[in-house]
Length: 351
Image (cartoon, rainbow, N blue to C red; front, side, top):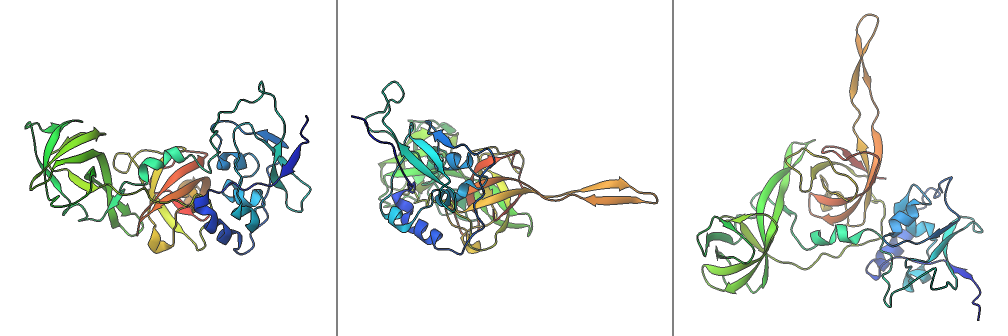
């Protein structure tokens, strides 16, 4: 029996973000969402797609995908999901063009589904999940009072996975899982020449074998070399992330101050890299905020008739980042799409 094709506007938000999405939709009117001249009339969802990447096919403002789907409060309360193989169509019958999902009967040769297909996520979650439960920033003295490795069971300098070590300072802590850290490079605001904190270098994980003073722990995994003097922090629960992309409600003027995993203040970042920003909760940033990247303008010397005249180059906007972890004075963001590599000290502002 043939099923008649039908269309309906769908909502892609995660249940985690429903309340925030409703608030975002109730904000002050925004400029009309502009479609790309080459926006497709139809698109078949592919494995690996995200709501961001799908919206990017239709508009240069992919963080506004909730508007592109013309969401309303009723749909927010009863969200739908899409999966690879679904057909998306551009609905131009409305005053504001919107996307819709076309449900059709497809043959097994055209589309093969698993018994539990994965819904398309808003952003590439795998890129940030490892960073949601680990401390990424510590205050200047933030690790000074943390439990410290004082010796290894075998006397070796470097501790490998499966090896054991003695730790002082755990006391009667009840945590079973611990993260091993070392204080990394300072995170400095280049505009004020002020240290905002220090990057926490994640070295591995450990579990308590025997409590006491010192306690005996076993390294359950090692990402970098662990040695005497490194510190332990009790493992925390993953931080909830609002996956609804949105622009900040107040002006943001910050800089990229570190490329996560980079060396010092050098290096570059590309798409899906992690960068640290010189703004956090104190500046109104929240998880889910989208910011634009700008390359600062420079000066060129131009030879004039009588003297060399400087030419001031304009700032260049070249990409977007998605804020997923926010601390008091520092935040971490995922590089979503860029036309050139991200460098430390690049500007970050409202999109």
